[in-house]
Image (cartoon, rainbow, N blue to C red; front, side, top):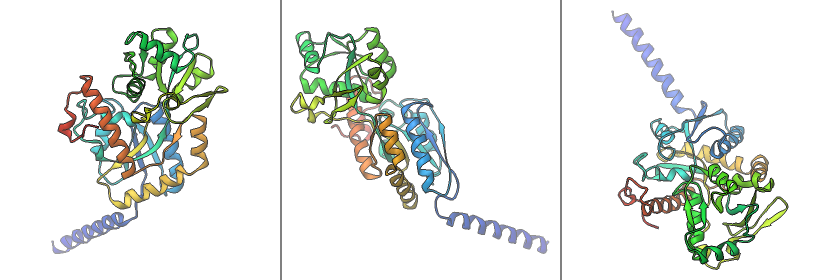
Length: 335
């Protein structure tokens, strides 16, 4: 009996030793999984697959990308990753739209639960159908002022980044459109082509093919910068209306995150790989080809950007009566 107990003790000690050795290994020593909260083929999915492939070049392991969709504002994917250990081996692929999950009852956390990495996003713009009588943003605004609240506008769903940008241009230009929500950017753009709405606000990446195909006519970028597409320069709305910078720009923030409670070693390793990836020609060429602006913020800087987006989104939804949870109860300050 004593001899058997001795053998068991030796085996147990060996297993503990192996476990301690594994724990002592530098992160990462096994493959990482990124769970994207939106569907395959979408902007968040595409960006994550691109950046993870580039980050792999600077890590000793592979990064596998999966899709964990559903819930409220991508809450299924966030809850899935939240329930994994905070050891850095399960990341969440997300976007600015996920900041509304809490106020819509999808989960009960502020967005600072995450330590985010922002790859970038595509700037929004206002466009009209190619046969529209409006040739400039000023002409469109003048028409809307002459008949307030009658010109139908699409900007994805209520509380989306595109809807917030539509509200910003309304405030900045002192004009009111008839906002008609659609379940996503593509349906809104299709509505513009079908003549259901007179204008659409979505991103340049989403509109590019329609502009290049002569189906949509861009009027203005909702950023301080102009844009070049289809042989034309799209002017900035900032050059048309003074004081617009009080409301804009509100930009997409697409990327990924790790638990904010993850260790400094995990955050540092991911940060180093992310910086190297963001600085690569691969990312620059991908962004240029797909009409995206590269961000590159992570950690506290990215958390500050998401905090602003979270506040704007949350209280806009509250004013629209589209929240099930009071933002203040979550500790979200009114902007």
